[in-house]
Image (cartoon, rainbow, N blue to C red; front, top):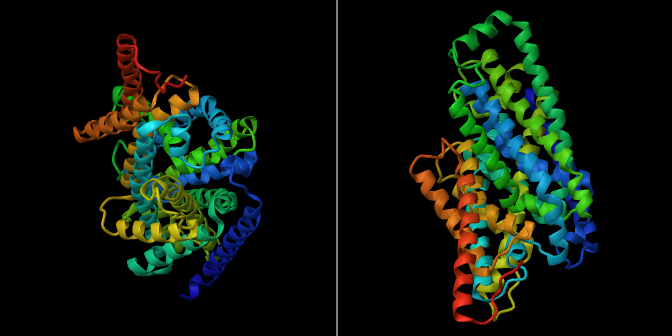
Length: 483
C-alpha cells in the first residue's frame, strides 16, 4: 500500500538493526566458555532491560490495550498488583539467584534445581522441570505468535497464515543467529524502541481525545457506568485480585526460565540486584501506559471488533505513516523480544536437560539454532489450533509454570532444607494444586500460581518431616538432604 511506504521503511530499519545486534552477539559469543550463564557477565542495564522486555511480551501491546478498551480503568490494578509482587521478588531473589548460579554453573532451571542432588529423584526433577518448561512455554509462545499474527495482519493487510508465517520466520531466524547473548542484545535494543513507541502512542491518543472532547466523553459514557471505576467489584473482590496477582508476580519471577536466565547471567550478585529499578520502571511504565491507552481509545474509536488490535488500528487510521512505522516497529519489538527469549529457553531445555537423559549412551548434541528452528515451527502450528486471546493464553501459561517451579526455586535460592524427594514433591504438588484450583473455577478469585507456590512449600516441608522420622526410627544410611 503506497500510504504505508514510510511505515514499511521504518519497520525495515528496525529489522536490520535487530539482525545486526544478533550478528554482533554471535561474534561476541566466541568468547563465551562452558561456564554456564555466569560467563555472560551482563551489567545492570542489560539485565534489567532484557528481563523487562522479555517479561513484557505481546500481551502489553495487545492484551493490556484490549483489557483497558473492553473493561475500563479497573485493569490498571493488574500492573499495580504485579508491582507489589515484583518489589518482594527483587528484594529477596535476583542477587541470590545470580550467586547460586555462579556456584552451580547452571544454564537451565533444571540444572539449577537439581544441583547438589543425586539419585533417581534428581534425574526426575530435571526431566519434570524440562517437560513443564516445554509445555507451558509452548502455550506462552503460541500467545506471542497470535499477537504477532494480529500485528502483521493489521499493519500490512496480510492474510492470517501469511502474517503468522512471516512473523515466525523473522523471529526464528534472528533467534537462531544470536543464541542467548543475541537475545539479550536485541532485547536491549527493543527496549529503547518500546519506550519511544509508548510515549508516542499515549501522546497521540490524548491529543485526539482533547481535539473532540464531546464525542470522547459520550463514547466513554456509552461504555457503562463502571468503565472508569477503579474498584467496580467492591473491596473484598479487589483485595483477592491484588493479592492473587501479586503472588503470581513472585511466581513469574521465580518460575520463568527465560527471565531467570537473565539473573543467572549478571556479572555479580550486586550488579544483578541493582537492575531492580530499571526492570520495574520499564515494566510498570509500559504496562500502565498501554492499559490507559486502551481506556482512552474507547473514547476515541468506539466499536473496534477486536480490541487487542487497537494500537495498530488507531495509528493506521489516524496518524502519519512515519509515526505509524515507529509504532509498527514498537509492536514488533515488544512481541519479538519475548518470543525470542522463549525459543532460546526451550532450546536450552531440550539440549541440556532432555536429550542427555533420553539418549544417555549416545553422543547426540543438536545445535541450538536447529532446535530453535524446530521449536519455532512446532509452536507456530500449536498457535493455529488453540483457542483464546493473547491474555488468556499468556496468563494461563505463566501461572501454571509459576505454580510448579516457583516454590522449588524459592527453596533452592533461600537455602532451605530440601532433598531430591521433597523437591520432586514440591513441583508435582504445586502443579496438581494449581490444576485443581483452576478446574473448580477459583482462579478468578485468587490466581492459581499463588496456590501452587503455597502447596509446593508445604509439600517440601511434609516430605522432609516424614523422611526424617523414618530415618530416625530405622537408622538408615545418610540421606541427600541439603541445607
